[in-house]
Amino acid sequence: MSLVFAAILTLVQRSDTLVPALAPRVGEATPVTIRVPYAPIIVKSSGVGTGPATIAYSHTRIVVPRGTVLDPSVDAHRVAVAFENGRREGKQAARMGAVFGVYFALLFLVSTYLRRFGNARTRLLRMQLGLFAGMALFVTLAKVLLLFTALPELWIPISTVPMWVAVSFDRRTAFLVNVTLAFMAASLLLFDLPLLTVLITRGLASSVFFRNKKHPWGMVPAGLGGGVVACGIYAAIRVIFEGSYSAVVDLGDPLTSPLVACVGGGVLAGLIGAMFRRPGDRLLGAVSRDRLIELTDLDQPLLAKMAAEAPGSWEHARAMANLAEAAAAAIGADSLLVRVGAYYHDLGKTIQPKYFVENLLPGERSPHEDLDPDVSADAIMAHVVQGAKILRDGAIPEPVVEFAYTHHGTQTIEFFWHKCLERGNPKNLREDFFRYPGMKPQTKETAILMLVDSIEAASRTIQPPDREKFETMIQRVIFTKLRSGQLDDSGLNLEDVRTIVSRMSDTLVNMYHGRVKYPWQRESKESLSKIVKPN
Image 1: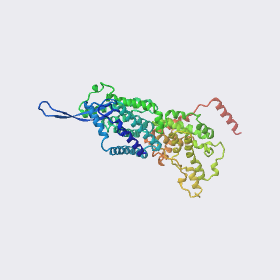
Image 2 (image 1 turned 90 degrees about the vertical axis):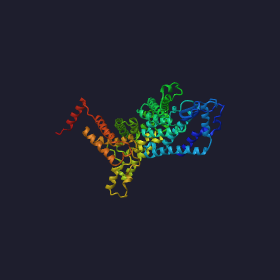
Image 3 (image 1 turned 135 degrees about the vertical axis):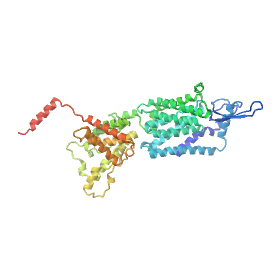
Image 4 (image 1 turned 60 degrees about the horizontal axis):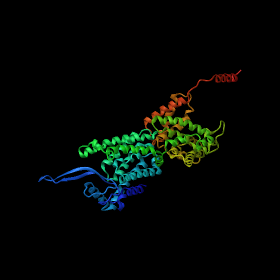
């Protein structure tokens, strides 16, 4: 994958040099904009009278707009033509190979990071394909802007992709993507240093400033904030290279002003990110808030199926949703995603609902009483695999499907394993046979659902329902998960755990709070006591 996208980006980077018709010719209108990177140019004076000639450096950036007739008497035109001819002459194969090597190294490092250190969704090939496609798209957009407009290159809006990544995944991944994308965009102008620095700074600042995932239009002020930070960095670079810098002179022509471009590029990136948020989510394999809200509709066919075929499991899922949403909100996780995950995570139980105790009627015989422990365990574990299949067949987004195959992690079904041992383990089975075939939670959201799955069921046994008893039970559940390593990859820290214990204890106390008895209830109790009173 890295090889394919590196080849595509190499063609984008060298596209103008591969077309002879785009080469500039003196005396003719240039077919594309010619840009000479910001660099020192030697200025030589012949001296005054018999005085010696002097040589000085003058840092400058040359932009010859598309359609300009190249005049050999104009110094800027001569430098631009010489620069472009130099790019087209010499060993083109060696240059393309070098560009390809740079792109391949960058993409391979990103892919390796995502596979080894990213969360579960960033390890998916589909997500990486979408991310690389989005990066290639914005590099192509930058190339078009450089070739066919005279706008300053600082308008390039690559901050959009890092903000999408920050929303869909995490800021660490967004920072890596931003730096990589900045190098790719800067390579279009021979790694122009001010351009590279501005793109990196603006992208990092924009990702940091964008904090509320619920409001995608917050990308616009985040982009504005990133642009303001980039302005300060750009001015500092100019002072470092030139010794002085005048913002007033710079702002004299807004269309060519680098400061305006710094801010405008950030705002443009925010606008693109907000306007195309849903396509961006689909590209990265994420799910938008609008789609999540749609999935909470109880008329959704899969939810209606669960309510009809596994009503006990459905009520358990609804109770879990309230607990999980409160816990997620307390630690700053995606509470809406957790609620949707709670609704759909047990959908596999609709295949054989009677194998789960919550779907049995009072007094109804459990089918497990007639089965061997290993057969019972296999039937219970099947709901994880079957649930994921049902959800994928129903076109449910992958971030929601993830809750189905992680809510039990790789835990052992202890009840049937111990039942097997009590019978002497006649089939010589190992404990692994009774272990769920899923994977450990890879995000805070899926970890919360795993905890709530056990906590909600255990909460029904707490009598009386006071806070201290709930807190002890929750701590015991969490410690059990920690001891078995189920939370190792979730990203939950000790502060998150402490907050979750406190919030879920409060929520359970409020759920099981006492009520005043109505008069008819007291009368019924008194009547019942008279009936059962012994003579």
